[in-house]
Image (tube, rainbow over all chains, first blue to last red; front, side, top):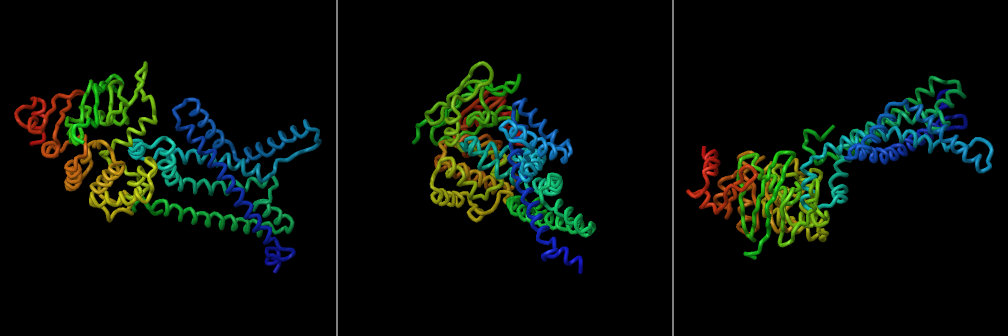
Length: 240
Length: 256
């Protein structure tokens, strides 16, 4: 009976808070994936360019953000960013600590990491496009922008989808680390619930189940998207 | 319009590193000409064709398409076109058919064919679709219009690729070994489409190993050897006694 009550939606129940927290986890991850897509595209383009300097910068980005622990990046962006904001506040006459909004800092931190993985996914997807199809686009008179929009982007998306699905799962789990900034996402809320009810096992199991539900639901959505994107592929390669 | 020069190439040269692939090739195509370019592999015939629509940039020489010269900058270092805009325009007037078809794999056959007219020529979509359907009828794959390229045979893909090039209403069609990647039993259907095009008066430049096409469909044959035009003439002249010994030896390989 106690279990039902603490998990329920009543006055002493954590049910509603946990569901909201799962929503926050989804939102942070979605924002991170979007930020990572933008960064990843830029970094992939840099790595594919003919400029030595851009190659180097792209390489540097992926090396750093894939090689340093995620937690450290989150600390760096949240606390580092907050010190910077505080310093600016001081200069403008405000005394005391100014924190970065934890949602923003968390989404950005996970996004930066996600971007380093997405860059590799996009680069591989671009290299998978047949050179002949690109030549055919040039030969018909498409200018660079048109070729990018009509031939390259749709195919990059198609080839990148399985990799992006993988990055999404990673980012979803990385978002748990954002709990260190105090953001009430699923990890943090499970922790708080466990601590205040002293039912540690129960709440961490429930938290774990909610993560599993999120990952398997999103997995299904990605699978469906992949099947749709693969309509044009020979059937042997198509279905996953 | 017979007598109009559709394509004029003058003294094209091209090297890859220290290796000179084209050592000064000239060629002129009047309206309605069907010119077969023959030669052993490595003779530079594909490179020559690719230089015409600037998929390769020639180091020297002039290219005129329908009376318009492609402006080039041959300075120190690598040559490049003076205006990418002009290049895109000229390319839209030259239909290119590749050995490996190169249909866009993420689009259906119909989408492949209307892509150029709609997005490059900016023509109304409905018009492009009805013309595309007529073209598909002509190349005999109207029933495949909503199918993706990967689900077609090589011969069907190549016919779709020809339709895609024709949809641009090109001044000249360039064929780069259009049947070389096909299984033998699929060669005929592609050659039939090309023959029908020739009979309609399309100006065509065809790099090929199909001797029957060169002999029976084209009105001029060019034999390339080591980056030069070794000899050229009508099929009767070339396949008769008048040809050079090297050409006779070359076609001898095909007789066996």
